[in-house]
Image (cartoon, rainbow, N blue to C red; front, side, top):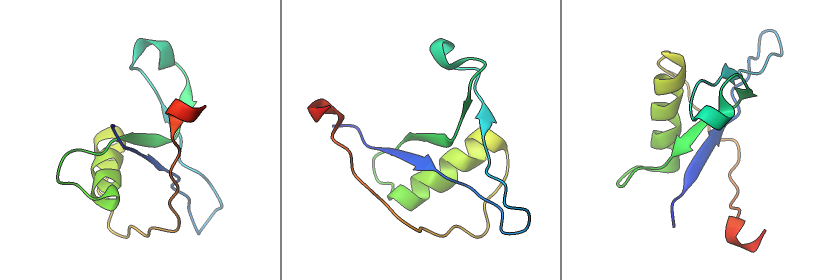
Length: 77
């Protein structure tokens, strides 16, 4: 089973949440979304979150804080 991370990035300074305008996959093109993606082999969820954040925004996260985690089994939905 493939695992994923979803990043809720917010600012303590102006109460804003980061959303990215997707261009792929095609069915998501033009839609706003949170940053996220697959957890690769050998990665922890926090490592995957930091990598995805950098890949999708171009920013290097220097102060990651894991506030919460949850697990959803989509095969049961």
